Amino acid sequence: QVEFVESGGGLAQPGGSLRLSCDASGFSLDLPNMGWFRQAPGKEREGVSCLDSRDGSTYYADSVKGRFTISRDNDKSTVYLQMNNLKPEDTGVYYCTSVYANYYCSNADEVLGSWGQGTQVTVSS
Image (cartoon, rainbow, N blue to C red; front, side, top):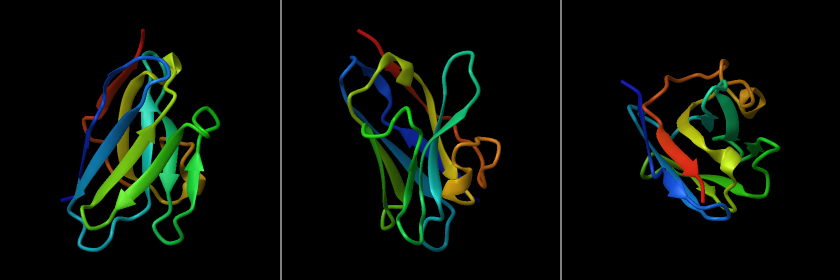
């Protein structure tokens, strides 16, 4: 059974950094295409960043380009999201899951895997 467990969220000040981790279990081979999504209060879930398992290409939402970096460790079956220069609008619950391709990353309704519990990120002074 495939499962995603997110961690690393918390409270950060504007301009601060957080590193999120996603532990994926249930895969017999290397991790598939993976993505991070977030849902702010009162808003729909949106795609933040995705990583192609074949060529390492990435997708970033315009709002996070230059600030967030997605990476993976296949040995640990873990995907990371390094978030720098955080802004209050980055506040939300962050989720990871598998995706069909980077092309679908902007649409949280077009994901391959299931949703975990997520991890709360709050950016506030």
